[in-house]
Image (cartoon, rainbow, N blue to C red; front, side, top):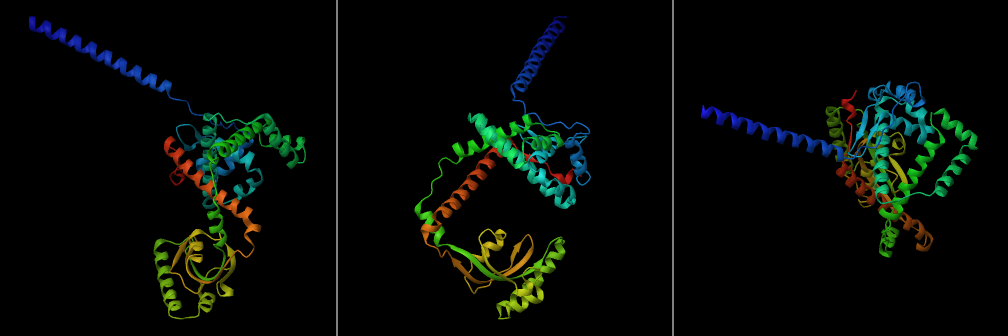
Length: 360
């Protein structure tokens, strides 16, 4: 009997301790959830509104934009970007381009939509930084942009009619204007404030080659399978061997190049500046010496062989182009700073863009 009594007491004690621990654990979890900051509200889609109808049209091409589901398209710890946010942004900021979105095939529309979603998310991430830093926009700044919107719309009444036609009002538009100004003010006052440009950077850009003239041969790989790409590359290897052993480059380009803009001219692309070509093509055109021929260069268009004909540097005096060069350097530094900051914010907030290929 004594043993049974002690066993019963031991069981009750253990039960009490376990019950207390579980209650404490549940309370801890609830408190931690309570203290977790709520995400920014997303825009819901109401049936028969312009935003709902736009989402419905787009969902015929991309099913994950179904307005009745209002899917999450991108997510992080601060906010979600849903279909409602996407189509509302498109109506307000991309109003003039809506017909091109509606008319695009799914294979073209998907990457365009992804870019818009990323743009919304990056804006929100920077806006959150601006709010945390106490950056604001004055009423005068907002009014200045609003007056410009009136002017661009041929008057206030027409501007308000446009907003109404897409299911928005001026209060919403003004809030968006204020947010845009806060982002701009944050970028200039915080992110870009320490940018410095040295004289040596200006001179280095001034003496750098400005334009290039090349001939090239393109074998397209657009919409080709991997096995087809392998065969195309083998064809390009044979062409490269021919030009390396002295074959006439221009004649080979006329016969084989699949670039409709240059093949008839023997692959000639004359006097193009930096930034005019895709990066891989530009790197080859501005790195190998005039008269030399590249190895096979792969771009989004296919395989290229590039022969550099000549390059030209800036011919005007430094004094005439200093302002432009300074702006060019500053713009490039801003791009690099912005990309670094955005990578940091996306990592810190666990940002991810939905893999749309698995959503259809």
